[in-house]
Length: 234
Length: 234
DNA sequence: CGCTCTATTGACTTCGTTCAACAAGCGTGG
DNA sequence: CCACGCTTGTTGAACGAAGTCAATAGAGCG
Image 1 (cartoon, rainbow over the protein chains, first blue to last red):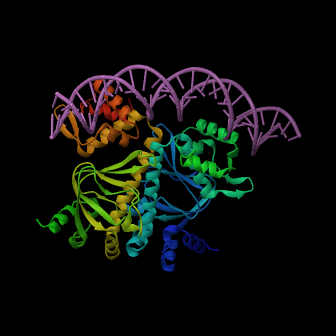
Image 2: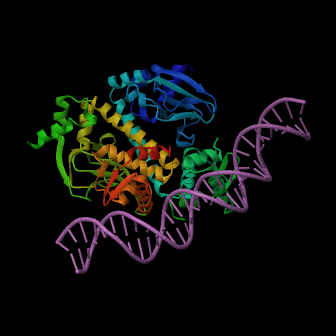
Image 3: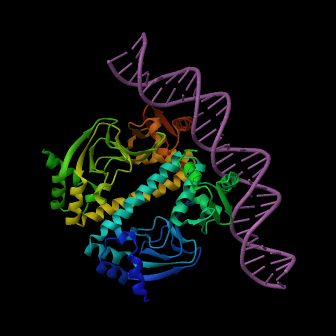
C-alpha cells in the first residue's frame, strides 16, 4: 500500500476527522509525511516551534511536561489514530507546550501546521472536530487537576490503572492484563507521585489479591475493587 | 445606551472576537440576553445542560469543580470581557464540566449555544478565535497540573498571589494591593490546599515583611520576593 | 452589644517523600 | 552456558510537609 493510501485509511479512523468527507481526507493525506521515532525518542520537545501536527500510526507515546528541576509530569498517553501537537494549526508561531516522547518505536503522520491551517480556512467544518477534541481535552485536564488537588495518592494510582486498563487492557483468565512499556517511574509520573509510593501501593494491593504485578506488567485480578478505590468508595 | 449597543461595545473587547468584523459583532449581540447574578449565585452548575455561553460584563466570577465529597477546586477566575461556558457551542447536548459562581454581584451576556453554533457555521473565521481561547486554556491547565503535581504548597500560594496581582493588583505606595472578595478559603481552593495552610503561610510571610494582610485583602510589600518563591528560587 | 463570618494559632496525626540497601529480571559478551 | 552489569523493582527507617481538629481572636454589621 502506498504511503498516501496508508495515510487515508489511518485518517479515517481519527476521531477528529469523523465527519470529514473523502475529499477532506484526501486533502489532509496529501499534506502528510511519515515520521518514525525509536523508543525514547521525541516527536517534539516542549518549547519547540509547533511546525507540525501529528497523527500516531503505530506504537505508543506520551505527552509530558518537564519542570525546571527535571521532574516530569505525564499529561496523557497517545495511542494510534490520535491527533496531537495541533497548537500550531490554530496559532501562528506557537510553541509546543509539552514534549511528545515515544514509549516504544512509533510512527506518525506529520502535517505542516501552516498548511493544515489553510485547509481549515478552506474547509471550515473541519474546525468543529478539532474544537471537540479540545473541549474534551480541557475537560479531562480539569478532571485530573481536581483529582490531583483533592484525592489521595492511592486513589490516583487506582485511577491511572483503570485508565490504562480501559485504553489497552486485555482480558485474560486471571483478570485484566495491562502489558505496556510502563515502569513504576512512568506510573508515578502519571499519578503525580514517586516510584517508591507506587511500588509500595502495588505491593500492598498484590498482598490483598487485587492485582498481580511483574516487571512492566500489571494484571487487575479484581478490577471491581480497584474501581472502588479509584472512586473513593473503599 | 440600549442593551444591544452595550453588548456590541462589550463584545468588541472580548479577546475571542478580536478579529471579528462589525457585522459579526452585531450578529452576536443580536443573540445576547442579559443575565445578572448576585454574590454567591451561579451562572450555571456543573452537569447542567450547556444551553448558553456567557461573556462577563461586570463583576467577578469563578469557574470551579466540586468533588463528590463537597471539596471545591478553583479552576480560574473570570474578569469582565471574558467568554466562558462555551462547550455547548461545540458539542450538541453537552453539559457544563464546572460551575460558574459569582464572587460579587455580576452581569453577563448570555447567548444560546445552538444559535451561536449556527453562527460559527455561517462565519467560520470566528472559530479561530474560539480555538485560540481553547488552546490557551489547555496550556494553562497543563501548567497548573504540573505545578500541582511537582510544587510545594508555599510555591503554589505564591503563584496564586502573583496571578491575582497581575489580574487585578493596584499599585499603592506600600507595594501591590490585591483587594478582592477572596477569603483564605478561596485562596486555598485556588492553590489546592486548606485555609489553615494558607493562613499559616501568609502569617509567616507577613512576619518576614514580604506582605501585609487583612480581611479579604493582601498587599505585596515585596513582590520580587514573592515572585522568587513562586519560581522556586528561594 | 452581641451575632456572624473570617482569620489565627497550637497540638497532633497522617501521608508521602527521601535515602539507602538490596533483590530480581534481562541482555550481552566471553 | 555463566558471569557480569544494567535496569527495574522492593523494602525499611527516618524525616518532613501539610492536613485535621479545636480553641480563640478580630472585624464588621445590625
